[in-house]
Image (cartoon, rainbow, N blue to C red):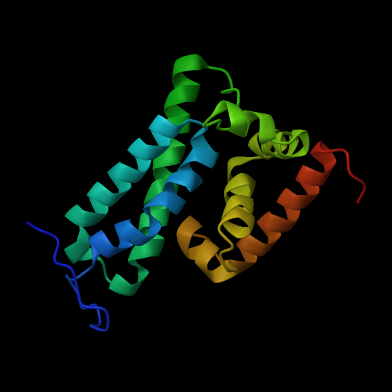
Length: 175
């Protein structure tokens, strides 16, 4: 079954989730999210591709097509969790995190402070890492983060507060 592109102003109805438009607009951001979570480009791209494949297959089952992006974000996070669980099972030790490097010039420009923050972020519990990434990297609101993570808005706020405190402690900054 082909994906039917909708015109710009046409409202979405049940069964008409415009997966192609969501892909075109948000694919890169979702790969970046997955890359921050799993730490390598190939796995990140696989996770996002699988999320879009499943979204396309179940697009007629979505209760609210306006929330399709939140559904895809949740699918990406769940896919990242699965990748990390598989790695933990295979290696039985934490996966060392190396910030992504796309070229030698880029590697030279990556500052030590940024690397330290990414390493410290990687050491946080999964839920805190996800909440902080969605807030500060993707600039999502509490409501959007809650929808993506499948938790309440209060849980999002408290998780971010605890995550920031843990991050400051990890980086050796005063309260």
